[in-house]
Image 1 (cartoon, rainbow, N blue to C red):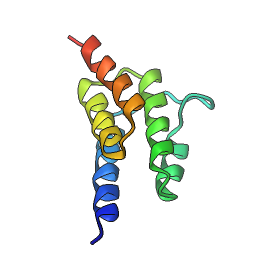
Image 2: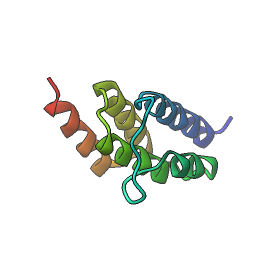
Image 3: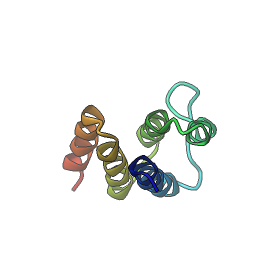
Image 4: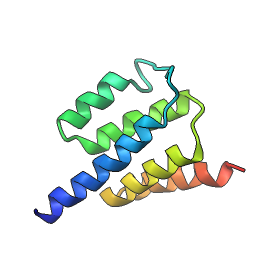
Length: 95
């Protein structure tokens, strides 16, 4: 297996964990975030866009620190420094 595929699997793993940490009744918004769009982006291997959808959903809903940790792990695996900084800030704000 190539390093790219391993990395994609690891990123998808963290995105899936974060998705599963959303509330059962997840609030969605056409502009901010939607589960359908998340699944669509994930299905097309557009991992950064899938991450963005989850971030939007996290903003709309009350999410645990673990949710933001999983987004942070995915962002770090993708080398997305700005995303990582936002998620670190979210974690720093939590008790």
